[in-house]
Image 1 (tube, rainbow, N blue to C red):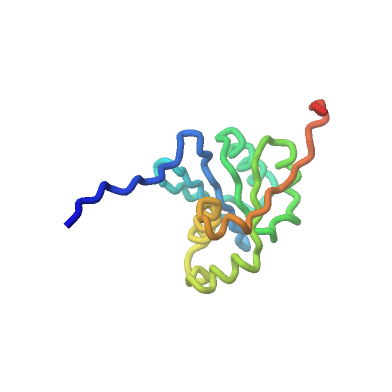
Image 2 (cartoon, rainbow, N blue to C red):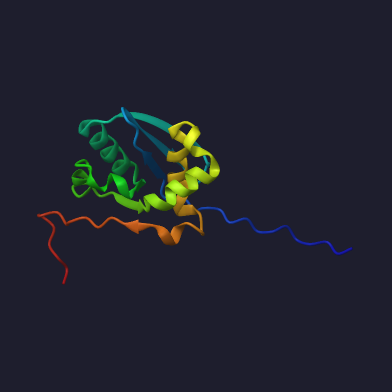
Length: 146
């Protein structure tokens, strides 16, 4: 019987950003911040107000975290704040998200499970191709290089 060397594990680098998934609810939204190095999940409950969502965006920008949201949140006015902060926002297709939620039974679980699914979306090789990056406008003070 041959002895095999242990498989090399793929570990995220120290430069890998934290990921935050946001799932809207009727009265409160749920966000889950996922640290890829420690695999710790921090659930955050926030009011469905523009002030609370803008505070979350500012905090995520300070943490250099990436935000992952369903495309149904594109109509929300708080995303205007995303163009003012240096924040990377990823958009997931809501039809695929709903299909995954239905198949996995997340429709009957607390919203933090769906928010955690959104936070893990960029790390899943099968789901990564479905992400779109939200393009933001440049700051008025910023000069173009070309």
